[in-house]
Image 1: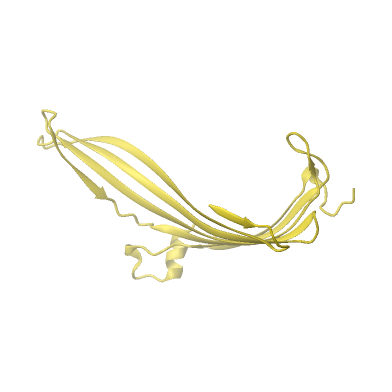
Image 2: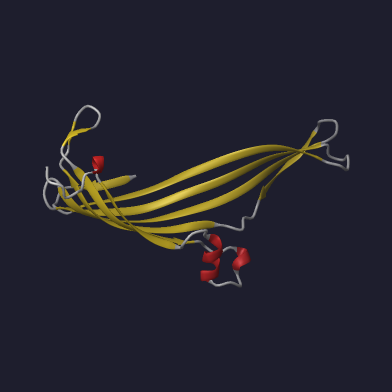
Length: 187
């Protein structure tokens, strides 16, 4: 869900979203004691992405603007097993739900960027046919993993170092323009 206000020279917008992902696996276990012949296992893995962000854009003219964006993203995980028990005769004996504890509980990401955007292109049926465009962006992302029950004796920095494979935050500078032309190339 989002909202953009373009009524004044200073344009702004906000967005909030929640995206659930679900994956289900099925399996069959054999019991060696002979009391229960089969146990059906239905394992459900859930990931929920929650995002809240905003943007501010200040247009200098019809073709060029300065943009600032910021966002917060939270990603959580959940694992649940549903067990169904059957006797050697095939008779249903019962079922059970088990929440499986995870060592890694989730992620928190903070993102921010600033960009200088130029676009005076004219569109044809499917793509721009005339003009030029570029976007020069400075972007930074920070990662913070929440603590889990097994991390009670360690510091936040140690938990973060164990939960990430790359650096906890990084900054990128990128420029993009069509057909390899310089953003400051005169037509």
